[in-house]
Length: 109
Image (cartoon, rainbow, N blue to C red; front, side, top):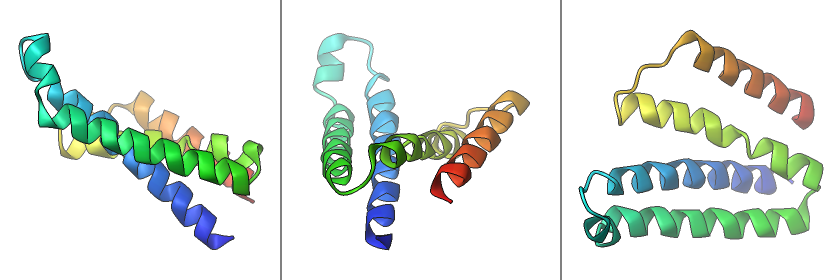
């Protein structure tokens, strides 16, 4: 069972980094440059892997666990935006993350 939770954690990390790479692909000025960006394809590949993990986990675990725990992705997204994109993290975001963490704990226990 621990294997499934590790896989779920990886799914959320892949999903968060997928968004990051797709965001990086938008640094180009035109749609053609975005389509030609390697970051778009890295992000798409990571989304595909995350989706496949999600499908497999839904087969092995309860829907009421897999989907809410997928919210961990938002935690990774905040860290990625702070450390890689130098975005500011305000009080509202911290409160939101704390609420997500508390919800994850309630579901996981």
